[in-house]
Image 1 (tube, rainbow, N blue to C red):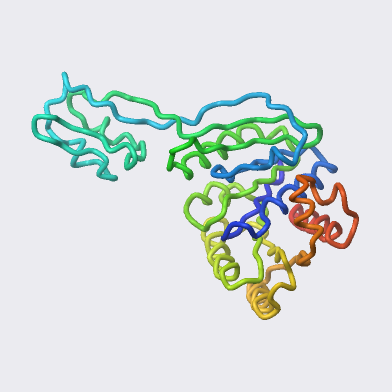
Image 2 (cartoon, rainbow, N blue to C red):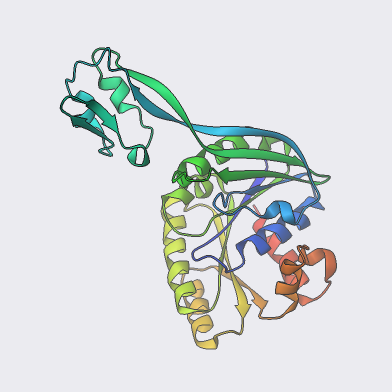
Length: 290
């Protein structure tokens, strides 16, 4: 089995993709590596890598289709729907509010006359790109879909059937600290929590640490402070919290070379050999320790 490394954090814009791309590139020098772009709302890893699309498959969810010729209007489906996505209108029968439906299928199970047929709705896509030492698996949310957590879960499940072919797997997680991160944390051996020295960055870091402890308490966890030097007072508070929890901290200085590499769609360690590159390589080594 490969070493599975997740790059997580709270708020967006702290540099998770920057850390994930560089970590994957560095690990790709040591063994075959799979990078998973799980930021399904805004995947962007393809812009930084020279890869070729190999296959694409849809992520579909169950949608109830009411067969009015069979329906006896017992209202079992309406009463048992956990999301209240089904409602009854006299003379018009049972109707669905698609945006509320979570695809659980309870309505189909409780219908005594098999009046609920199985419809399908495309919630997103999974794409696999082939590279040299670094391959890429991307999740994309379908326009208009609200099932981000569902698509992420299917993406990680699909990846888990592939990653026995790899030495390392790096997951670029979406922003936030909600339940959508559970499948990522659950499968991860090591987790890099990326933050920035701002009050919101600190607040979300604490939430992310608590989530990881609940879901995957046995994982190796490190903290990456991006834009170090931006706010010394908040950064000191981050260091104190990390010290109290026994977590190692890596710092990326607030320097224009980082946004320059991102704006140029280049991976930092490919174009710079400086102290930041050294820190990124040290971080990758730490994440791969047993």
